[in-house]
Length: 49
Image (cartoon, rainbow, N blue to C red; front, side, top):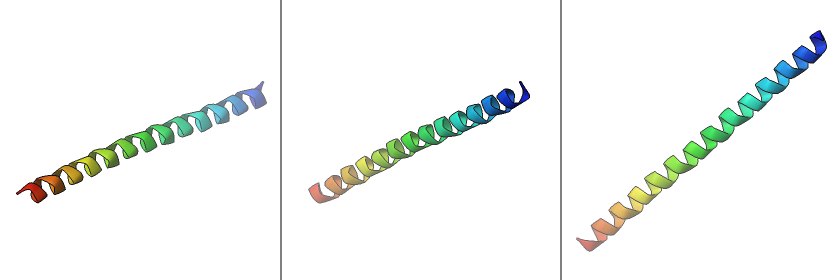
């Protein structure tokens, strides 16, 4: 039972770390897309004026 408990704990930690990393990557991609969109919008505004 102790071995099973340790295995479950390690699996849960690995899944938690994977989910944390996946959410972090998604947020980073969204942030980069937002910044890129703002930069292109600013470039277009500068070109118009």
